[in-house]
Length: 201
Image (cartoon, rainbow, N blue to C red; front, side, top):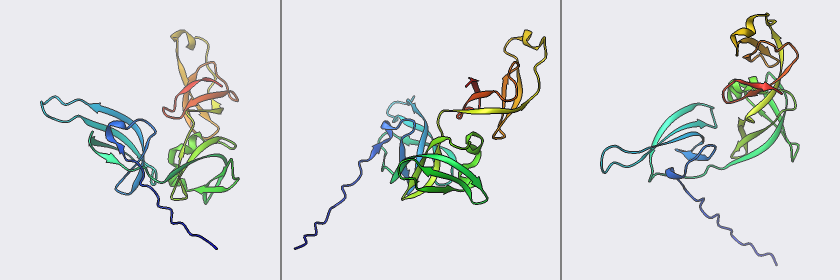
């Protein structure tokens, strides 16, 4: 005899605006967002409520926007799964990734990847957000290692200025400023949030 038990999904706990912090995922008007920055604005007027100012990234279209909320506001958690993937290659269809645990492959459109493509090279491990089962956007590691493809040679005497830099083009096409002594073929660590070089890899 088969018994069918109806399993009721318990409602997801709501996240209060006063609990928001970087990297948390929330849903606003049916859209999934990642919190990039949070500022708590203390009211100056008596009786006014504390406001929570945020910078949010829409996981569906990659747009970044600023929104303010009252601390009493609450948000549901979106149905987002975070998956560790490796970057395989890009072509006319978009950017192709492979799930490190299931070996399933995903494709994310060029529009969704946007400027993040400057930090992606073959074999890079990163995280992908899956919303309702579909891969929608990337979560880059804070630092990536990229090779200098071309840069002008540094000139003697330039270093006297102290901290002088020059423009270098990396293997992904990203242009950064590097110390004068760095040459073609050297590998540098790049901060994916600022686009700045943090030194040799």
